[in-house]
Length: 303
Picture: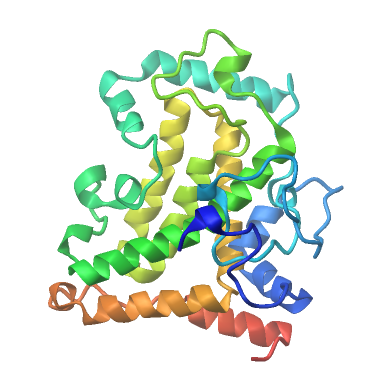
């Protein structure tokens, strides 16, 4: 799909998320966990996040599956630590401590993940983490379908992350403390939350449904992405934690979207039929359809 010619809220084709569908999203345990840290003044709203009119989002941040958000993106994570607070001071202290110990090899690994991607974050041959899937083993048609599905879903994750960034406009660590020297590319966007961490957290959950036997390694790889952003000096630790919450919440909401579930099912079918993988018996059904069905029944959403 050509995102450059696509309006911000087009392409979904279904009605606005209903209150019952919001309940489905909130019923998923990791979204409940993500929201449990919100300040008491935060509320769960069914208002749309709405189109951003002040400055158009770039093509890579436009949503694919979600027509709109069931509540403002900023409510997912709450505000960043107040400047000068204990948490904020700990953020800067941690950055300086990590900077004093990091190695050239660690900085190089962090630089390889400057651009979020399926392979750069999760492919065994690139990340080098034992237990990750090896996407090079897939048949070409299966690999293309996986890449397309993953990319489409990540548009929605990035969309939520970018809306959250615009809500807070926290400065990058190196903009606040000249002693912090990044060893990766400096960013122009605001610091809170970390879009890389959100991409990685959601990506681990998406891939965990498709490669359940690799779920532990996928979670470890996602964790390393966030650590690399701190090690690289471009994110506070609290930025990374907030990014993880965005990623988990985005996946929770996507898991109630019928188009997302349909595409997920199709990729599962292709993986099950992939002759290169079938012999190794690495495919097993995930749990997202069962979770979504149970949640829908509990919420009384029906079909």
